[in-house]
Length: 189
Image 1 (cartoon, one colour):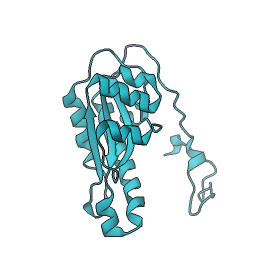
Image 2 (cartoon, one colour):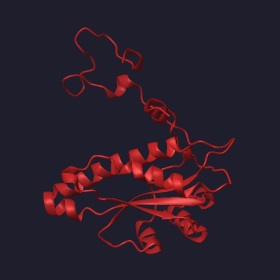
Image 3 (cartoon, one colour):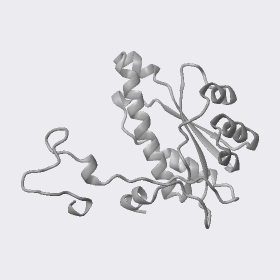
């Protein structure tokens, strides 16, 4: 799969095939995350692979999203910014957030390549997830990813894709025109 296809075809799913995803494919997708940029070579993100149905059910309750319980595998991404904070002071936390964003994007594209589907769950009871997975207090829970095999037919969460002209500026914030160009669009690139 080429990068353009992976980026454009990746969407959030809230329904999965009943077949469990191959744990090898999940690990391959996590392996892609290792290549995300990090400041000072400090890799702060960690992955917890959960396959126990009861534990997945408890994570679904913590997120108040019942579809999670139907997944046969969940990955919980956490980050430990201690090394970043030691090296970069108060900026370490900000660098950790940026690092996790890059790590998760690589992970999501890896899942797409492996033909697995997920949805990044942002909302959950943080302390409940910590308790379920015995995550130390200094480690941040970044997201829950119920992973499954793409269903033959099923519900896909709506995906809003911004148009290029709404997110692209030239030279300074708010400047939508480049010298010599009247309008820019994805086709122009």
